[in-house]
Image: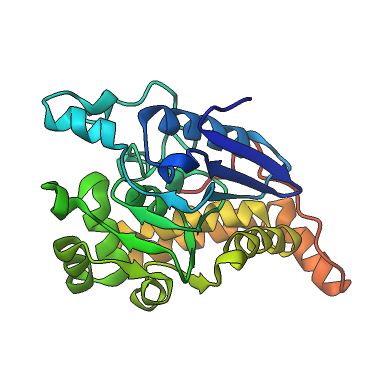
Length: 285
């Protein structure tokens, strides 16, 4: 596939997707969202890909919604579709049975079977926030800036980020970030729990790609898919229900070739050779 607003590359087990409007700090437009759904589908369906890295071309990750879209909205338009509650025209990849929580317009990354890492190389603001928070892990440049921006535009906590920020850094920090829209750099973002790692600018993308490569070398893709779903589904479960589901999923894992290979490789002191995620994916619920 070819993309106008993205760059897509596969290197071994790693699919890397660049938001590619560097002249506008990768400001978000509706067509970029459609292309991103297509690129994630391509990575999800590629058996050689173990994980996905999402980053930005140039100096920014995603500096928010394109100002022409915002101008249209402020004048009573629909911002090129951004104000519509309808699903985007391009089908979303991931598990269609994952439930509404994991299938939103900017949260469907959570329903993919493969890990998604945001390599936040530069400014992330406004509409860029739900994109970054929808990823499973976040590596951020120490020089990059995170700002919600919505309060300063007369807007609200869009696309579920109030829930996401609350889960990541607690209500007081979530409200501070939303109320003030203050600028947070990588090291503080890591202290708050917004990102997993704060790294020098030139190390962010390589570190994210190396993380996926390490997973490919040592971890079962089927196990990654099941555990990813467990973590997100357990946000809505109590401990007893979580244990019950885990017991059932554990018993099912005993019958997969991944378990036999994991034990054999350990006993034989060699790297594992796990199969890719099967189609259809293993039961994850």
